[in-house]
Image 1 (cartoon, rainbow over the protein chains, first blue to last red):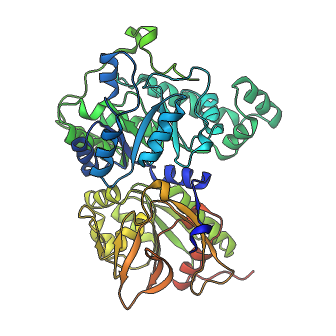
Image 2 (image 1 turned 45 degrees about the horizontal axis):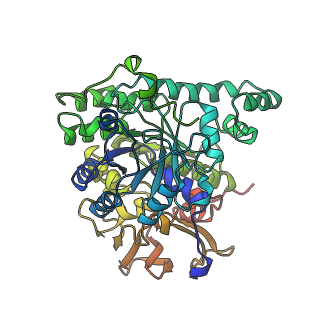
Image 3 (image 1 turned 90 degrees about the vertical axis):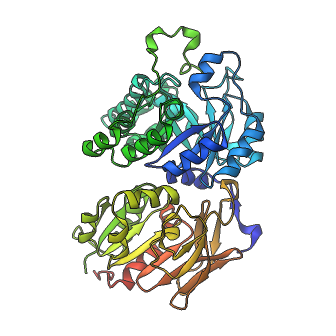
Length: 298
Length: 201
């Protein structure tokens, strides 16, 4: 192989990396010790961050990219891929994480947005991006900007799966609905949901999003994870759900197995048995408007 | 002979492997009596004459193979195995990470992530020994390499870091991901060597 003929950071490499995560669990970790626990439990990747979402809620203030020292500590601790979160629209935080060597960047509504108008122009980067979405239009706008993976937003840090379910049902339902439309009707629908028509056609043809679609934001138990898989997720992100539970190691392993056997209730029953307390949950209806994370970025 | 190809569906890019083998079989003139399906449990292996080990996270897949009681059934599988990326790691006799419990089906030592992190992932056209039709466009994603290989191994391609494609008996192991493109020459070669030939129309 001649080095000058190698091509790096292509769309195929970005989407290919995302597809390798399928059927897996990506876990939020804040230090090397947690990262090792996640890796030993069978996580396909870890998300490095300063604080898990439930702590971000408690702290308030501006939530930013993690200290590079933290990210490096985690990268050095594990051999599985390491992801990192940046603020919506904060392309310099993304440049920093790319230089540090993270394997995928999450442009995340869990952090305080840096730009209320524009998301990051993700095609300018060699590193792949994952972005949150609540419906098909939002997902396709992010893919059009260069996202190689989508995750439904849910409502992070609540331990309440209701919003994750809503967003997954939105996206899967909209795609199912497309199959009954002709091309003109799809073009009209694309305009209505503010998405490029070509991507709408592609969803209709393939019966799914053009990229991998994970679930996030509120998964706290093995059953929650399996529920999202049965609703059509390609895999799950678990944020506060692991390290805010009473026994993180067991919870991590149980969620990995539940995702692997998502359609086998016998296995889910077995792994859920005597797991201890899941993270404390929040009723999303009690959140003030300014406490709701999913409406950040659209 | 009809193909009965199982794709190990523990974690990773399973559906891409199913699609790639279906495309290869179609190009070889096979009809619906040749099948490609997911393998989740040991019992599913009984119906297969070939098996694909997909790409994914090798530490996760290895852990779930053990957990699901698949280790011995895979080790004693009698058909050919087509292994890419994480699958190649699992086929080795030795791996540079103690968390991996390799199947030991190909006499080779494998290093994980031999090229580096995702930013070092790349696409390249590579020359492959004995493959007609020109170079193969290969997609390497956090790819492993074989650092040493035994006498029974036939090396198909190398990079400066090590061996990236090889065969031993009925098995083929690749560092890269042919299932992410439309070139099915390696799939067809693998099936041919198993005695699953193209059907003349």
